[in-house]
Each structure stands twice: as structure tokens, then as C-alpha cells.
Length: 258
Ligand SMILES: NC(=O)c1ccc[n+]([C@@H]2O[C@H](COP(=O)([O-])OP(=O)(O)OC[C@H]3O[C@@H](n4cnc5c(N)ncnc54)[C@H](OP(=O)(O)O)[C@@H]3O)[C@@H](O)[C@H]2O)c1
Image 1: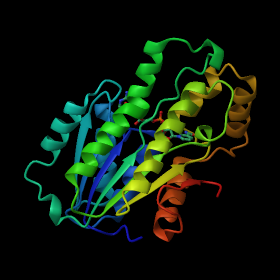
Image 2 (image 1 turned 180 degrees about the horizontal axis):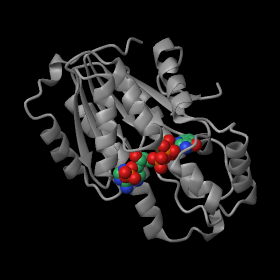
Image 3 (image 1 turned 60 degrees about the vertical axis):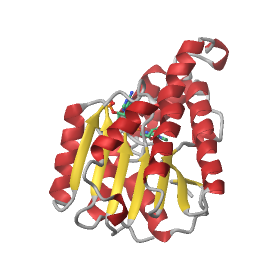
């Protein structure tokens, strides 16, 4: 797959971690006059990402939207994209490319049998599943007439159970199945479920510090100590290699270690 195209690019969770590096490295590849639309809560984090993108590719436009995606409605997504695309001739682009990267780890202090609060589940699923589907629906509709690439950042935890990660795993499993169905239905859209492996980000620091599972806390502590934990650069390079080689079938789950 040739990523060096005039691209409309959307990425959620762009202020830090895997999303920040993915945003920079994807934008590095795009043709002049591409447009990147980035979401996260932290305005300063998004500005930093924007500056780093412009430093590697000054020929593209970067628009940032500091929003809490854990509370956003379908209408707000609609209005935000209308604003972001104001004056933009969508059909002049060679590809629309979205990375659903946003994610939170959920309550890792509790075991599955303790997770009985429906409001908490709704809050978790709003950010990690419902909002993702809402944004993706807007994406599919707005870019109906141009080739589309959809990357969902998933996890091994969505296909294999890990202690203390009932909320996280349930969210990732639901989200991944949504994208598998999308791939099945939309033959003209390429969908990749990319699982980045264990990466040194704020998310895994939370697991290392707060998980009720000693096994998980210890696992992350020792992988940090022994420096076997992945960097955002390593996993981003793998994700881009998977896309460029394009050996996956649309909808596949591809892991860093595959
Ligand atoms: N790290 C790993 O080992 C690992 C492994 C497998 C999968 N993943 C997945 O990779 C993705 C990125 O994770 P990461 O490790 O890079 O985590 P991270 O460093 O915590 O980054 C999460 C990103 O999501 C944004 N975000 C979180 N809550 C948000 C909210 N309510 N509204 C808007 N944006 C929000 C954060 O920005 P703000 O705080 O500025 O809002 C940040 O940009 C996630 O989907 C995660 O599940 C990570």
C-alpha cells in the first residue's frame, strides 16, 4: 500500500503515547496538501504533536480539536468534522485514512466480579466503543466517494483474558468485532485491527501501578527494568510496515509480534 498520497487523515488520542508517534510518522509520508485532523483532551499535547508534524512535513495542514471524547455526542462529531472540512474539497483527496487510537485502560483495581456499576461501564464504553463507532460512521459517510483506510488500535487483551482487565478486554473485543463486521460489509474499505504489543506509555504505567493482579504489575515492572517493553517508535514502525506490505486481509487482527 502506498501511503505517499494526498490524504485526509484523522487520528484520535494524538496528544501522547502511541497516537502521537503514529500521527507524526503517518504525516511524514503524506503528499503536500494533505490534511490531518487530530483529537485528544490536552490542547498543549495536541499543539506539541502538531509542531512535530510540521517539523517533518511542512506541506500539510494540521487541525487539532481538544475535546473530551468520553462525553462527545454523535452531533458533536458531525459538527466538528463539518468545521474541520469547511472549504475542503473532499473528493480532491486520494485517500481518507482514520486511526481509531483513543483508549483508556479502565478500572484495573477491581476483578471482574467486582465490576457491577452500570454507570461506570457506560462511561467506559462511551469513550472506547460508542464514540469510536459514531466517529467511524461520520468518516464512512463523509468520504463515501474516495478510497478509505481504517485502522483500529486493538489489543491482545481483546482476544485473550488477562486478570484485572475485564473492562479493557470487553471494550477491545466489542470494538474489534465492530471493525471486523465493517470490513466484511464494506469491500471497498480497507480495515486493519492493529495490536501494538506492550508499549511504554502512560497507560501501561497505570497497569504497573494500579492493577489488582500482582502478575501484571510485576510483568510490566520487569519489562521496563529489562527494557523489553516496546517504544512507541518501534510499534509505529511495525504498524506502517504492515500497511505498506499489505499482506493482511481487511478486518484482520495483526499483532506487533506476528
Ligand atoms: N500501551 C500499550 O501497551 C498498549 C497495548 C495495546 C493496545 N494499546 C492501545 O493503544 C492506544 C493508545 O494507548 P497508549 O498506550 O498510547 O495510551 P496513552 O499514552 O494513555 O494515550 C491515550 C491517548 O488517548 C487520549 N485520550 C484518553 N482519554 C481521552 C478522552 N476522554 N478524550 C479524548 N482523548 C482521550 C489521550 O489524550 P488526552 O489525555 O490528552 O485526552 C492520549 O492521547 C489505546 O487504544 C490502547 O488501548 C496500548
